Length: 157
Length: 157
Length: 114
Length: 114
Ligand SMILES: Nc1ncnc2c1ncn2[C@@H]1O[C@H](COP(=O)(O)OP(=O)(O)O)[C@@H](O)[C@H]1O
Ligand SMILES: Nc1ncnc2c1ncn2[C@@H]1O[C@H](COP(=O)(O)OP(=O)(O)O)[C@@H](O)[C@H]1O
Image (cartoon, rainbow over all chains, first blue to last red; front, side, top):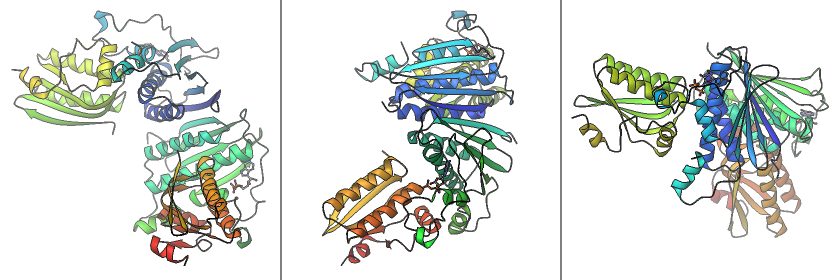
């Protein structure tokens, strides 16, 4: 497999304006490795959420701090890691956005998005500071019956 | 100016397949900072040539060696640097592709392309090995009279 | 421009036709501002027509929720019209499908205000 | 697919209609192969219709030159048709405008082989 084990890395300064550059690159990589439209859409969104969190909560918009996105194209999956240089956080210690009393909260759904759209998401504190989010999406497409079924699978329900 | 001094970096492994990812990112950055269609087209092409050289002549397709592309958006210009990890070369010591006896050569026009399309191009050996190509394109558009004139300016003739 | 918002009025109901992306930054801010101006003008019977919306990130979903709440707090209502499949998926994932009043055609949405 | 190549024949002249990009790797290789098969079949009166070509990098220009030379070496001719503005710019920059035989309409290009 020509693309196996290949790596592409993108580094941006902490500005929301640059997120579109990241998602466009993500779309291109998804297309290159044969993700269908649905899979590309959800991967794009998970990456956006992760980068937005890195810019906003991690680096707190500090233009001196970068966000580093790394794509690793493996034979079975696309792996994406997003690293920031902030104080880090504990993802197990967050309000559940699906709890009825939180449903009307104006924020707090990004991590739910990421968990829903990717096959796996992990957070760890980087040994040299900041958070490192590692996400992966399988390359083998889920079994398809009809339009509805497929979307169902892609969002992980 | 919101985008002044901002930096985006992209790193790819040494494969021609990834060049399209680089040029798409280049197009997005060009669009973001207001380059017109012509300017975007030529910048795209100069970046492609530079990255192709880094993959082919610099890193000699070694998948362990990366090509690092850095975009710096300044108030007056877009600067793009392309770094490889090869043996380097002396750009002053190359056959002139415009010499009548070289016109039918199947190769050797990439550097001519880069010099023509950008406002400045410089080559230097990186202190830690490999070549570092630094190119820039002014953000102020050239005076426009008509379609013909504009293209004329954009290709630097 | 990420998001385009056109405003229409049918009787005392304001319809905002949205096209594009509602995302963190620009898109979310535009939505907040558009609904804000309506409320400032005392127009709190609002339909958001999402038929042309292709993408709503978590910040955009949050913005929809906020505008829903703000409108309700003035005694008005903000309803959603023409949800594309993907946007409906997103409201399902976030358990907001039953929070919003959602319509599939404009006349039914308009009648619901009577 | 970067480059699409369709083959037509008008009498003993082969016309290749190219659409897309002629760039290092895939595109250049496709062009080489297409012209190669024509020459292998003894068809060395060739028109490359570049009307649909949007982008030719330095490797692509080199490939055009190589196919021009290879065709000539078999006693044939390779001519260019319908150059888009940008591609013409590139041939000007590389001083190849006068090397190639270039035509703006197909019938004139075809007649030139008589
Ligand atoms: N990279 C990060 N660095 C620090 N804190 C983070 C990071 N990502 C997420 N968080 C924390 O987790 C919370 C929930 O994140 P998320 O679910 O994306 O919702 P939102 O971004 O809308 O608050 C954030 O409010 C923030 O406190
Ligand atoms: N990054 C690089 N590292 C080493 N050599 C290079 C590099 N870029 C260019 N060169 C040398 O310069 C020559 C001319 O480059 P160029 O004008 O791009 O034409 P081409 O790539 O078609 O040979 C190459 O053949 C190569 O010998």
